[in-house]
Amino acid sequence: MTATLTPHQTAVATAFLADQARERRHLVVALSGAHAYGFPSPDSDLDLKAVHVEPTRELLALEPRSRHRELLTVIDGVEVDYTSNEVQFVLRGVVGGNGNFIERLLGRLQPVVATELVGLRPLVTAVLSRRVYRHYQGFARQQHREWEATGYTSAKRLLYVVRTVLTGVHLLRTGQLETDVTRLAEPCAVADVLALVEAKTKGEQAPLPTELSTLWRERTRHLFTKLDEARDASELPAEAPVKAVQALDAWLLELRRAQW
Image 1 (cartoon, rainbow, N blue to C red):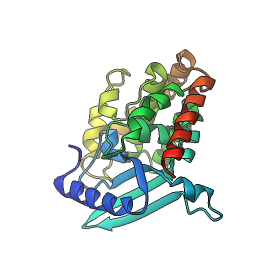
Image 2: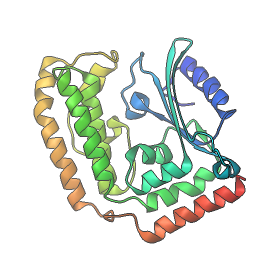
Image 3: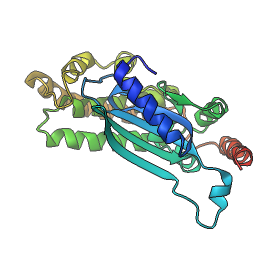
């Protein structure tokens, strides 16, 4: 499935997703969380984020079924955190700059991919706008508050701050998505990220060495400044281009016709 998972995790994920596919048709399932962000530890859960397609007749029925599914379970010692949203809801979020949904559709680690995703991905790229700044800035601030609540000791919480900011910076600068912090550190000119990753790989609750905690309290302020600067210099449009949104809408309507 992916080199970041052990054979046992891969087997659990494969069986779990096969069960979920009996209930809904996945357009894509993306591996998220620490595995996608470049800092998994042996006790990291399987964070599976999906986009599914409801049959059109279900959407038009008098009582349409639920379009959202969340499930947290443990299978053979592996914690699985699964979420799936219906494609219409996801695409609306993408137009509005929702990074969670953009990452599901454009991420590199996708254990399940339907053929329709090939045509969808360039349409998603075409509607990207500076609206993504609000998502990444807001989520990073939330993670920073959670890191602060640990007394600045959690390696995991700090890495979530760093990963989120750098993904936003890279997306605003290049229009391309990257979620792996080890791939982002060099192009974003952020030093010592691998030291944080090394601390985190010891476990989900691994503490930061005191010197790293002290160093990164100041560095996180500079990271948020870097994100602001990336927004100001970004060549992405302020809003999703109208023609690009229309093309996305046309894609969805064609999908609905085919999924009666």
